[in-house]
Length: 82
Ligand SMILES: [Zn+2]
Image (cartoon, rainbow, N blue to C red; front, side):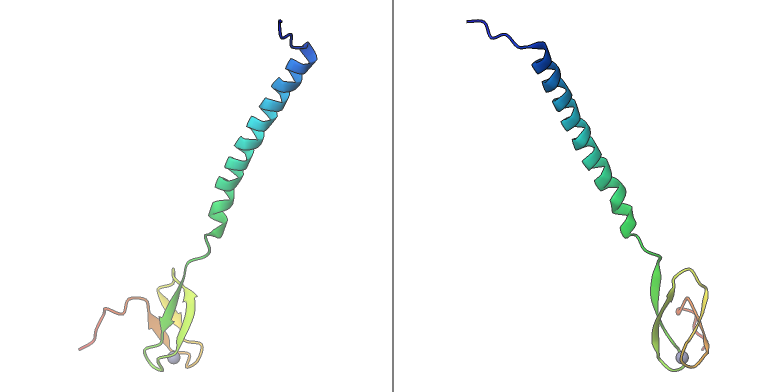
């Protein structure tokens, strides 16, 4: 017995397999592109040197102003004035 595959059946299987392959590739690339959306703007927790009030401000600033006592705080706390 010879298993004869119809031309339309073969074409249908070929289209379906290619569609599944494209869909799988689309899912993989979609997952890759959605991952960087979780990256937010870098923020850091600042602690005021005057009133010890903690607040969140941008990490890229050199000097941040305390929202409570309006005093300015430097980014690098390692600088000590002895
Ligand atoms: Zn303060």
